[in-house]
Length: 125
Image (cartoon, rainbow, N blue to C red; front, top):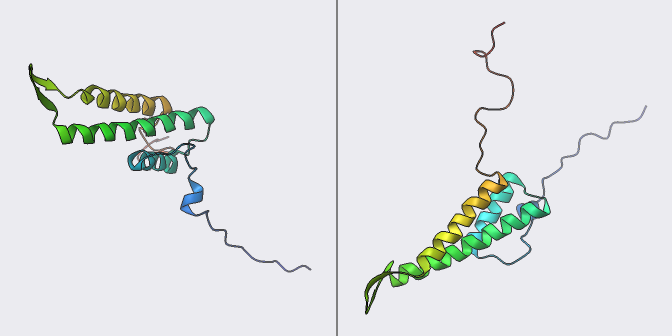
């Protein structure tokens, strides 16, 4: 009769190893988005990772443009009168790209109801 060696506790990998690193450098906002998406959805296909990376870069770009707009003001006074800040349309374009990328990756779809059997009040047979 052989003796059972017992159970071994297996620890999950540390947080930094569980989330894959992006293949290009990201700023603080883009990296936070990358980590949040990867921790919830684990995007692991090459196309999905590239789209997520592009969205993360667009978030960084939009945040940089937002900082410029806040420093200069959303409306600039010129010789010809008041004019919208030229970076406004670029910030909006980057944020719109992020929104489309989120939809394309399917990250905006939540389950309508939980998966599994209905509760006690569900099916009555």
